[in-house]
Amino acid sequence: MRRLTPISVLIAALLGCAPPAPQSGEESIAAPASLPSGRWLAADGAGESALVFVPDDGGKEIALICSMGTEPTFRVETGDEAFAAVPEAAAGAILVGDVAIEGALSRMATETGDLVQMRTAISETLLTHIRAAQSFRLNAGDAFVVTGTVPPTERDGFAARCASIAGVAGP
Image (cartoon, rainbow, N blue to C red; front, side, top):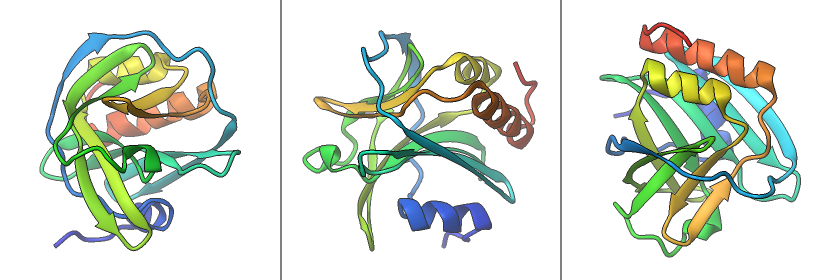
């Protein structure tokens, strides 16, 4: 059974809780031409840190989460309806700026609707990409969600918290 930490309660309130997903590889990809507007919320709990993008247009939130379970992981999750037709374990990618980390989506039904996520291991390279990224995106086939521009202080603080959780050197 998954133990809910304070950060998990925040994420559950915004998106729902999510199960683990497979790890993935990396490749480079172009960033979207325009980014949505919105605000960023940061939250920390025991062994977890989250940075949540809340779009101004009322769309679903996108959560960036670093956590320590059996291993340190970074995940992106959302309840966006764009993923409604995407099957469990569909091939997809987390885009951290212009770097794509490929893997498979996992899906979970929550009280507020379906939640999809993808996760990967935290590494010094990933943290360097997080610190340089202007936005984040989750892709699967034609379905995707993208965050707005991440303020440098939010981005750097999140990368530092992820490094601390993972016990790896920060960029």
